[in-house]
Length: 274
Image 1: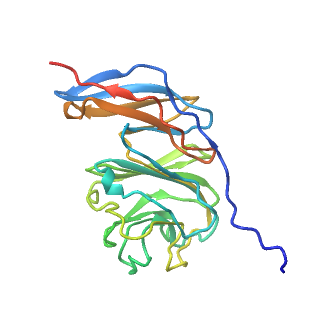
Image 2: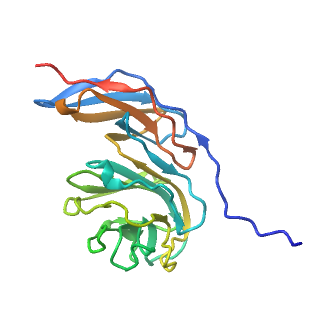
Image 3: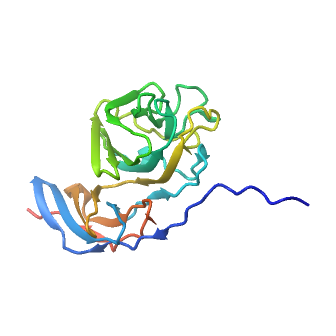
């Protein structure tokens, strides 16, 4: 009845990282009355680059997308439900549209947020800098010190706290990092999602589609995160008397080499008696 079809979009299949294993007991430090940190070292699998600690009851979101730009990310979490702290990371390589506006992720220009000034987004600007647009479409953060080159592998990490939004961009090949923090827009950042979240472009506007590859997206309600090196990572978790007993778990985050790990064994952090 017909000739062979063209191929589908490419899908990369990756191994799953093994769960991190605690290598040392927590080392507690009293920051002030009723406020502490606990530092713990974990052994991680080969290929793991970043780990996060989160409450044992919390869940993470991770996706290895197809190569189609503008694809909808099913079940993307409502970020502010993770308030006051969450972390989102996205790995990508731009191979076109230099000096043109490119979408990385957001909920703009869809059937709910139809106008140009509605919905949040993370983008590369027309001057090849980092640009964040807040949920109401009127808050713009163009971090001019964060720049992107063509044909270069990057991991962009956004960390949200109650007081700030921080972007950290790592050039994977050169092993260099650019960082910027904005304390003025923290209350606006990624309010509850109203429309579908899409990756690398918008449902109703393809002119801003990203050209290149997006390897993965992670969203974690992280209490703390750390970079892994030589099979090990040390996390420093802040907590207070009101949080305890605090049950935490550690996960190895997805990257271009592997999928997110299962959680480590639960570790209980305790306050110090007076």
